[in-house]
Length: 264
Ligand SMILES: Nc1ncnc2c1ncn2[C@@H]1O[C@H](COP(=O)(O)OP(=O)(O)O)[C@@H](O)[C@H]1O
Image (cartoon, rainbow, N blue to C red; front, side):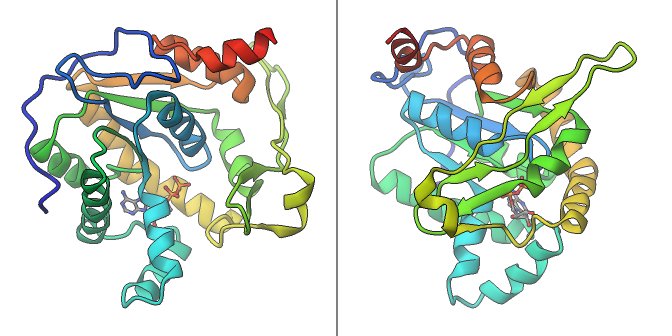
């Protein structure tokens, strides 16, 4: 695992303002090394991808690495298909192998820093990661349980351009002192409408199993980082328009492009 070389820098909470044009750097001169945690359907991919564009670091989603391997005709493909389509976790060995290969590609391109999405998902993965590099910050995205299943079932991907959409519109009414919550659907543009596909593991039965496994295997990872003072808890207040500015605020970041388009 050549890419997993030890990095000696101290973890530091973000304190500076980023713009879309300058990569945000940790004080010791390297780019951020962040992790996104959160249940299936919470929107890790959406927010990790937006932040990776803003900060100029690669967004590495282990779910994407697994799906890429699944789509190939390699020896791992059929083994992975069975595991993923049952909502189970792939073995730590396989996932570490896929991730180190991907980090190797980034290193060869001269890219540094990353936003990891979907890794680590077990304590063992977190320990292995801790043994090879410093994670600066772990963002724990949280969404009300009743919205998670609907969000997963509403997910659609354009088979041509790879765009991610969501046909579910979540409208939870205020009840017994709990505030309501509204999340608009994210409909595809007309050119993608006829090319939408659904992930094979986004069925009700499999999503419920993925949620169960998250609580069993990944919740302890939240505690792992909480005890190290690295966990930033972020409750999503609604859809992207409400949540994105608040997330940036929580991270002490600013999206100049967003501001410019809002002012235009
Ligand atoms: N870190 C990991 N460890 C083990 N399995 C993983 C990991 N990341 C992804 N997978 C596998 O890929 C599947 C899809 O992952 P992902 O797209 O991150 O899904 P989710 O929407 O559940 O967060 C998981 O259900 C699991 O089978």
